[in-house]
Image (cartoon, rainbow, N blue to C red):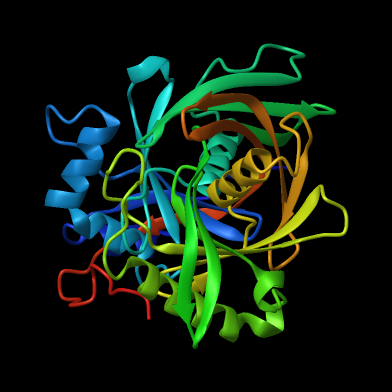
Length: 352
């Protein structure tokens, strides 16, 4: 017999004693990396109806919600959150603003796999499934642009999510001087920007027991690479670059290990969806893998994504790859977030 769960009376009594600014959320993980999806409690002002407007409002007027959701003591360096936005813009079915410990990134692959999985598991978009269908499709508007979702069932149970990610590409290549040596790097884009390094070329182990050295080197690389700002060599646009991606090719060219380090110095437990997209675009651009082939990416804890290309588009000086990224997320639990007016740390503090 299934049991319906509710907060005990003493918890509801405490919540109702004053304005606790309650937020309800569902926690999930994608390949080991957490995503917190807001279910209720954050109301948008009148006139804030699009993803970009919501992102700007949060950033400029209501950043305490991000800090409460993902900063310590409720979250940490790995915690990301998603605020759903009821919008049909750009032909999408729903929108999403992504909240990370340091920013409001344009796209996050593991977050969108988590969000899409929760949409399916909880029926947040009614009418998606038709009886006996093995898959359904919908679209999420992210700050980076529309992202397609294909959700699949096997044996009647939800199995995987495939994201049709935004176009991914190689931005530029060069060297960075760190620890008295020149390290070859490439700047890649897969919905977010990555300073990318072939770990084998610098003799860097990507095993768990080398995590401290991975983070140390990533911090140095990021500092050196971005010290004078980063510009797109084609558009001249200034770029927000804050993550480092190390990779190691397997003897099998269709498998690669990816370790992404994000501020303040934490390693992504998943293979990183936007990082996987970015690296796949590089391998396709370099001719090391064909667009129709499938690449498996593995994280530092052994979780995996797969990626192939929906299409490739060439322009003068750049090849654009539209990745099809496949993974799965799992619900961890449900969370009632509250703020005590006497708590000086109610809005959280940045992870160490």
